[in-house]
Amino acid sequence: MTAGGRPGGGNGFGGSNDGGGNWDVTPWSVPARAYHTGMWMGIAGIVMIFAAFTSALVVRQGLSTDWVTTAIPRILFLNTGVLGLSSLTLELSRRSLRTRRDAAFARWLYLTVALGLLFVAGQLAAWKELASRGVYLSSNPSSSFFYLLTAAHGIHLLGGIVALLTLALRTQMIVAVPKKRVAVEVTAIYWHFMDALWIYLVILLLVRL
Image (cartoon, rainbow, N blue to C red; front, side):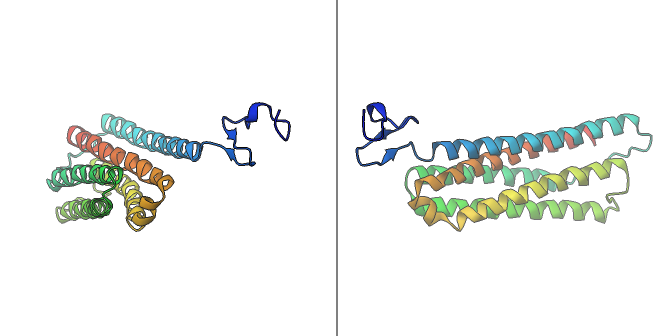
């Protein structure tokens, strides 16, 4: 028995006593798991939202007598390439962080933010192109779903851009404090999901609209 009646010097939580009352609990493991779990739960919610949108599109198209095909602006393909490239630059940033190349970590992170903003600008250009053709949100059911799906994705993507920009402004802290790096990991999960979701939406729009 040790002081305080704890047998074997353990703390009852998987740690150990160093004899000076400093109980050794594995640091940050629970918060890291919590952050990842929270992110995956958030992603699950977004999946449900877009699944509902997809079901509504299919049902509306099947029952519609006023469905008019909406030609997809070609800039959407360029936007897809930009977003895909942003996933690559984010992975390069993460790799630089793991290999302790601090300057490269920050540089790739800022480039990812720039590409995300470029994607948003490209989406605005796509909407402007449709408007120049006289195709608006209320023009027909097809155009309504185009604006709805791309706007919903854009809003969620803006959240990712804010998170990336926050990381970019705190690169020195992230490098200096290892526990802060979990923010990079969970943000990368979200960003790659946004990339995959966009690819799904482009395919859906090409097939259904």
